[in-house]
Structure formats: C-alpha cells, structure tokens
Image: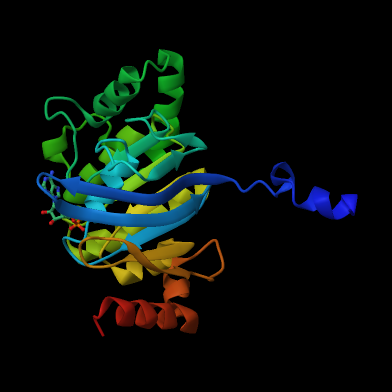
Length: 267
Ligand code: ADP
Ligand code: MG
C-alpha cells in the first residue's frame, strides 16, 4: 500500500467546491401524472450568474418555484441550497417574479421597509440599506412615489429593491422584465448587470431572451420541452465587468447567440 495514494482518495480531502444550488434528479408532477420536470440536474456555484433558457411551458417557472421552496419536489430527488437539503422557503433565497408584489397604498420606500420588517431586520439596519439601495436602483427621486405613479421599469426596479433589502444569498429571477417593452428591458438588464457586479449574489435568471442570457451570465442552462430537464450548458467566456455595448460588439458574443439560437431551434 502507498499511503500517499490512499490519502488522495479520502473524500474529506477532495477540494471543497462552493456550491449554492445543487439539483440531482429533481422532478415535479402536478395533479394526476402531469410531469412538469423530469430529473433536473445542475449545480450553481456561489456568486455565479446563471440563466435558464427554454421553450414556453417547459417548466422554467416550476423549477424556480421548486428551488425557492414554494413547490415541493417529487420524492426521489435531492435539492441542496447553500449546502443544506431544501426544506421549504428559506430566508437565504429571494425571488422576483414578472409582476411585482408591491402594496399599492404604500410608497416605494415603505414597500421596501415592509419587506425588511417582515424579516425582522432592525430599523437602523433597514435605514442604512434603504440609503444604499435607492441610488443603486436609481429610485432616490421616487422614494415617496406610489407604485401607480411609476413606469413599468421603475416598478420592477422597486420590486427588485424589496428583495435586495433582505440581502438574500441566492437571488431567483423569473422573467423579471418580461412584461416590459424591449427598450426598457434592455435598460433594466444593464441595471441588473451593474447591481450584480456590485453585490455579487448567486443569481438564477429565467429568461426567453438569448441575448439577455449571454450578456449577463457566466453560464447558460438550456431546458428541453416539457417534461423539462437541463439538456445543455454553455459557459459564457466573455470578460467582466461587461459593458453592454462593447460586449455585444464582440465576435464571441454573436457566436454564443447563434449557438444558443440553434440549440433552441430559433435560427
Ligand atoms: P414555463 O415557465 O417554462 O413557461 P411552467 O413552469 O409555468 O413553464 O409550466 C410547466 C408546465 O406545468 C405547463 O404545462 C403548466 O401548464 C404546468 N403547470 C405549471 N404550474 C402548474 C400548477 N400549479 N398546476 C398544474 N400544472 C401546472
Ligand atoms: Mg414561466
């Protein structure tokens, strides 16, 4: 026996990977046998920005809700969030949906405060986070506005603020800008890129925009038709920080867009 070789094989000496989300054979069946997700396998590392692309109805939102602990996955799989087996909704995980959850009678600032108060964050801490976040979200001038007084883009930025104020370690975004026009979407993607470059949470973003996925992500996961599973992953090897205009001018950017378009069947 050669002790040195034995030591290499000891599991405790394997290099520790810093994994934020690990899904193994995660499935989800609705009602009487409606299989939405089938053996979904992937990992997302801490601090990584990953986008999930897939055809409409393939189970993207279902997957995000399972990761968020809002839907219980089928038995037999394993879902680990920050090294612990997922067990329902966690304070470490924040979710932003396509339509905001703001209270119509409360201002932008009050909506953000309420989201933090629900998490029992001390008032002084909330005050600090509000002052930090409003400029990042470019909402300083609108802190006293009510949701109906804001544009769609501002409302989604405020909705992002309601989640960011709780400082989730993992941020799940389900087509957060999907209901907005193309120009506003592009602007918000630029904002999201900037915010992430400052805060560096782990992000899983669901989108149906290939260009958006390439611009923002470290890695893009592609899902199959329902029952959804991950069928392909593409590492986006473009330098950071990414300036949106300069990034889109790069030859590599165009190649990734074409490659993903072919995978998605939208050439
Ligand atoms: P995507 O977000 O990719 O468009 P969804 O995850 O919303 O897809 O839906 C995947 C499939 O699961 C669809 O066929 C949808 O009708 C079905 N589904 C989603 N949520 C439910 C639910 N709560 N009950 C029953 N079926 C559902
Ligand atoms: Mg969806």
